Image (cartoon, rainbow, N blue to C red; front, side, top):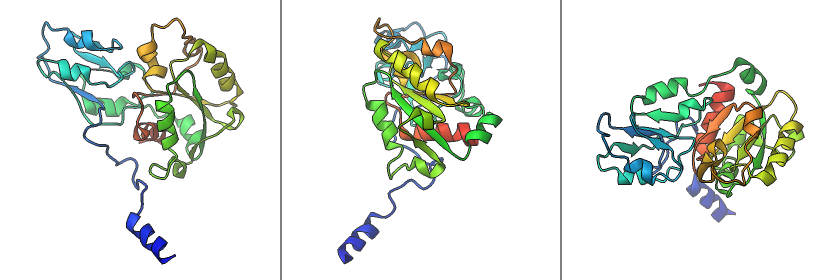
Length: 252
């Protein structure tokens, strides 16, 4: 017993005490930043991007398509693109996921998530989510599982995943939505009582990712339902997801 106590004391507290102030490793690829007016007549970044997330004139990256592979940064002869470790990328606007050399990080922070008073009132103290993997590779799904482990401990904020959509307040979609999963996703969403939220997690779910041109996909779900929160990443980071959800239901 004494050895067990000694071990517990040595380990300390593994959980992140202040989730909103937490940082990630410097090697993490998060929000890109650009050197202005240095991108001229070169389109190499567009050519190497596997998802077509990059366009020039002005130089910009669609974080909803980006898989954060870093090929654009490595192949840019003018060092116009650099990925920072800023991880709070979630937004309630699909348009804001398109960041350009004319945008600023401060502007993104101000506009990223629109706090809805009704959402805050209904879900601010407790939020149960049903996660549906609609053809995903299991990477985003594993990161969502990590949100509830002892390190991130999402449950302390009243945010938890539930097995049944009938017990949920919202749905978290991962994966590009294969044709075989489109009906199951729709059924799960309909089973959730009103009012309810839709959270889309990962590049595949937001845009189709590297599978966007596949005839095996059926993404009509997004034509019928409004998304409340987009969480970019490939895979997403637990801190990106938790901070995004906290901002949405509780405010900054």
